[in-house]
Every structure is written in structure tokens, then in C-alpha cells.
Length: 322
Ligand code: PGA
Image 1 (tube, rainbow, N blue to C red):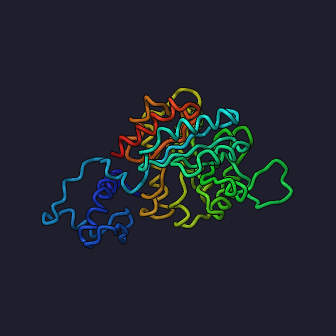
Image 2: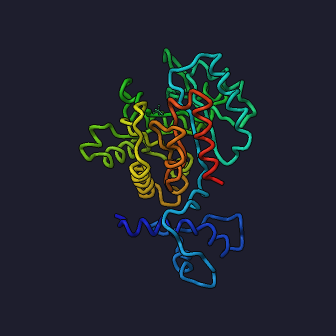
Image 3: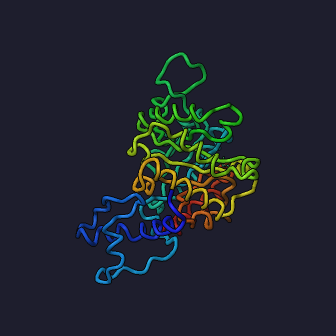
């Protein structure tokens, strides 16, 4: 088990990792290097004490860590809006998103509007996501939608295991896992949601609940598949309630998820995984949340239903990026 001190060192050293690897290899495009159990390059460990390389002293949790991951802001519209209002919303978003190249942005409308929204955003910076899927490729599954159908409509992402699906529709980690494998095999990007209830937080079970959900939902993934999977940490008590996890509460769980991913899939992979925060993200808390070193984006519910509340969240990510 990694100690806290080792973890902080890992975080600090990763910041200078790619700069250093590039400087030492003389290849500015190359950032992959063999790493030790803590995800640190052995070369880096030695070289960080070498004055000839002129490395700046590492600072705690610097923003440079982000350069290995791209911010990803997604709007989860849930069962809201109608066809006309959906299309009108994406037109408003597209008008304002020209210079957001450094941030990935997606909207996840109800499945019946995927076609219209997909047609409206085609060729733009906006990407399309679904809120759920069924794992089977086709067949007698009344009311369900397959990965192939989502791809056919131009979807890039699929939200899996949202707490509303777990609580209202009884989805288990096993269901999430089966869907996850189907989504990855279809070449779609999953957004896997995990998070504790208020009772679990108050009972001191946050870490164990989130670790369990993460481990079981991700069972059987290859390291390569993991690197392309998005995780969304969404404390259930913060969803649609106006209560947000404080930046440090959220960061603590995000850092722990990344540490768990490091144990399960290797630290180099863990550093690549985008971990979004979700739960009452708004214009006025986005900057502080997104400034945390392990928070790589947001899964936004209520505030994604209007351009004037969603765009400032994307803009907050753009500012931090710059
Ligand atoms: P909220 O929802 O932003 O309305 O809290 C987030 C989500 O459920 O993904």
C-alpha cells in the first residue's frame, strides 16, 4: 500500500515526467517511458536531483499534471426537453463553442432525440452521448437500444451506471460491467458513474463504496480499454440537490479512484484516465472544482439544460486549461 508521502511524491514527479522524458530522449513528441510501481520513471527519480537538467522544484499539485489529460464536460439532460428545445439548445451552444478545442464537450439527450440533436451538431465541436444502452447487439429486447444503434446515430459516448439507473431501475455493478464491455467493444466511450449515498458518507463508507463500485464495474477490462474509459464520481447526495461536494471532498475521492486504478491497471494508465465530477456543478463552483488536480471535467445535470448555465462551466475549463 502506498503511503501518503509516496503518493504526494508521485503526484509531484508526474508533473515533470513528460517534460523530462522529452528532454532526455531529445524527442519532443515522446512521453511514454517505463515506470516503477509508483508510476514514476526511474530516470526521473534520479534526474530530478540533477541540476544540469535545470528542472524547477516541484510544487504541490501543480496544474501541469492536467496536460496529460483533456478536460471533458458533458451535459446529462436526463428525461428533459422536447425535440425543438433540444435542437435550439445545441444551436446556442455551438454558437459559443468555437474556441473550445482544448476541452471536449458532449451533450447526452434522451434517446428519442439523439437523431435530431446528432443531425444538428454534425461537424461541430459538440459530441453526442447516450444516457444508457442495452448490452445485446440486437434481438427481442422490447424497449431497449443497442450500441450499434447508438453508433448509427453518431454517438461517441454512453453514460453507464448513473445513480438514478442504479436506484430507480435496480442496475447493479454487474449490469454496468456487462454494458461497459459491450460499449467498449463497439468502439464507443463509456462514462462510468460511481458514488456514495449520504447515509454511506455519514457512516464513513465513502472510500469502500466507491472502490467497490469502481472495481466491480470495471472487471475484465484490459489496460488499453481502461485508458479510454471515463469515470464520473457523482456523490448521490449532491445530485440535483444543490449540495456540492467541496473541492477537497471531491478531490480526495478522485485521487483515491486514481490510486485504485493505478493498483488495478498500472499507474501509467491511471494517469491517463479522465475522471469527471458530477453533482450540482454550476457556473459558480466549476472553477474551484475543476482546479483540483484529479478532477478532469464535469458531468452536469440541471445546469446543462440551458446554454447560459452550461457554457460558463465549459468556459471555466477553458480558462484553467490556458
Ligand atoms: P446535477 O446532476 O448536476 O443536476 O446534480 C448531475 C448528474 O446526475 O449527472
